[in-house]
Length: 320
Image (cartoon, rainbow, N blue to C red):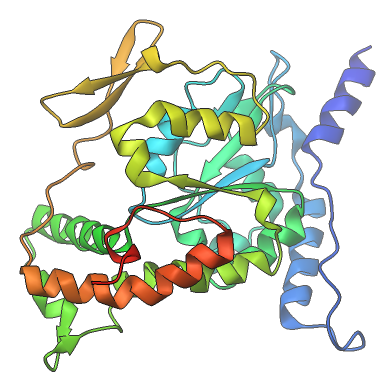
């Protein structure tokens, strides 16, 4: 009986090797394919199942769902809310396996080791917001599991830019380091600085095109981050359906905290809110500059709406 149980657990933990899509030139192995081959080879050599099996029957396993982004879109809130479901086992920290080369070179077994212990009926979830905007990540995720269910949370691109700046600004303030004003990033030679990285991260259609090369749209559920902030329960219901989870999360799991100004969570009588770093006030920005930002995102947003077949209530979704 013990041998049977161990065999079953090994089947769960052992990563499934999924061949990448065929290259245009089948005779020439691409560097990406070569790296994937070495990664899988390293995985088979380094498996240490004793570390990944718990005496209570749980084990570490590759995630079946990944929250891929977007940065400052509400990924932490989404993960915390989804974790209310008893069938979800979530990795606490951002793993950065697919986008950081030093992590990726460690192989899939290293990736498994970053996952929480879970039971066979549970879905393991990890979130790394940088995945969405990292060009190499979609293919790497596909090579690991082409059936992966992906969660993408987006918010108004202009608001996301301001949140992006705000996070970096406060990080510098905490280290007592000076940081330029947001206008110095947004304006260059009197025009909108479209080379600003925060603006590039908000060009959703460019990054989405990259993901759709490898995953069909029905494998990517887009969460409306603006609605999640204002009324979280309906958005979480949609996520439950997408992941084919039984409806376990209720409206009573959320309550509005007037002091913090956003929704907090209630689970089995225990209340908790997101870290104080979440929901910070954005810097004051000149109205004309905001209008420029809205105008800039109008066409990219239109392309994104056409790409995913739905619209969002964003400032720049309507021409000025």
